[in-house]
Image (cartoon, rainbow, N blue to C red; front, side, top):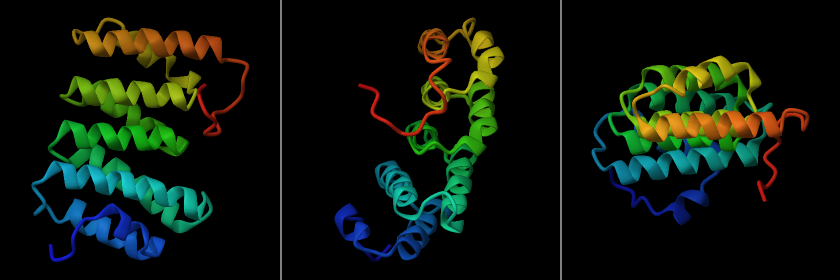
Length: 166
């Protein structure tokens, strides 16, 4: 790729242009540097804050996160896509997080998808989370236990709106 992947320069691009570059890097399959792909996920997630949920770009970013969950070969990159779904309250992708929890080969990705469900306060996923209590991966089972406790504690607090946890 000819441009330097300096996130500050990328942030100066209009949302559409930035997203197009991010998609090019993530989907062309030629970028082997997972640190650059991770940066792309972060940069795409930031765009959601600039455009809002009603903008078609938001939907495109949500779909991109799922594409990464299903197609990137690096667990750290897939982990970041799961985090961005939770961080940016992309609730329509909860089924995709559940799919990653049940089917991803990486415990790191499963862990992050479970945490994202906790951020989203998705009480509808309690059955999946309960199932994950018996997962062989310690990080997965411990995260499921943590999120189930957190969901119980926050059950009457409404939907996650991106507020600070502290």
